[in-house]
Image 1 (tube, rainbow, N blue to C red):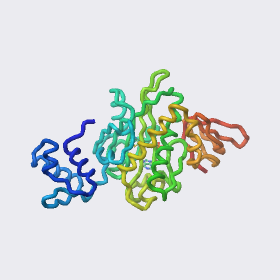
Image 2 (cartoon, helix red, strand yellow):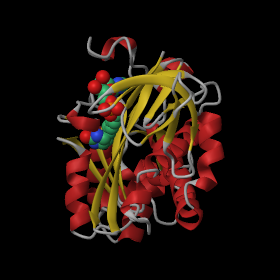
Image 3 (cartoon, rainbow, N blue to C red):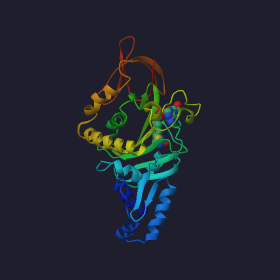
Image 4 (cartoon, rainbow, N blue to C red):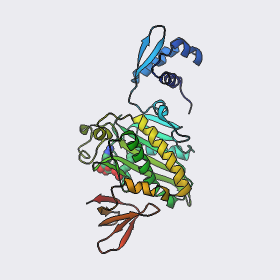
Length: 327
Ligand code: BTX
């Protein structure tokens, strides 16, 4: 991704880590006029960055906006491929839609699409995903694993483990639990949803479009009445403002690491971690699929990430897709 002049200036000021950066030196090293630097500084201020200007020394950064601007994410990013190309928008209908298009055009593995706001954020089965402006993380990652379409169905579980690890690493005070297949709950309320869509041909996965929606900085009154009772945010649970850029970078790092493992060794390599983090196994659950509704004990998960349910008469059923309710 080519980096704009404004972002280059920002990177240099951020890298100075609290030391003053001279406007003249910026102008000289970037080969632009002093006035051009000043104009970019004005734009950065409009975006929410704050600076102190120290006479004869230059600019000192005093505050950053809580934004998902790629430059912010890059500061925390420690990956080879994931997040090295980021498409960042103020408002999108759905990051999934943009990801589908970019994947068809050949975007490389690890490409990330982020919207500060989604007007038509979606969950599974055409359900809506509430994605208000600037409070959450609404992103899609394009992944191109060398697996068959059948194997790819367990990838959502890999993503759930990566997001849980990232949250636990940065916010030790919260305990996210994975509710099969794609929710992260904290204290029983939904904080994250994952939607994995696929572009495939017969036996080949062209791309997985991994949509991750995380409620980060919402307060209770930010949720609509529809989800107020079932949703929570990391901020509400952790008791502190969430640095969304740091969280995105940490998720990408875990996701890259687990994806490599998954492609090499299959879901089996992540199964034990998933089981540790799951709040589903051992519970009595009600399963709703497109066709029917039934209940039993969630007794385990297979090496392919398929849920096993033991019914009251002892028969075991395998659940490939559906919604579950812990009862
Ligand atoms: P899901 O079908 O499991 O969950 C959808 C359900 O979750 C809704 O019917 C509603 O009850 C509830 N819900 C809606 N919004 C929220 C919210 N913000 N917090 C908690 N609960 C909510 C889950 O689907 C998958 C969601 C993926 C969202 C990402 S965001 C980036 C990407 N782009 C996009 O359009 N979708 C994905």
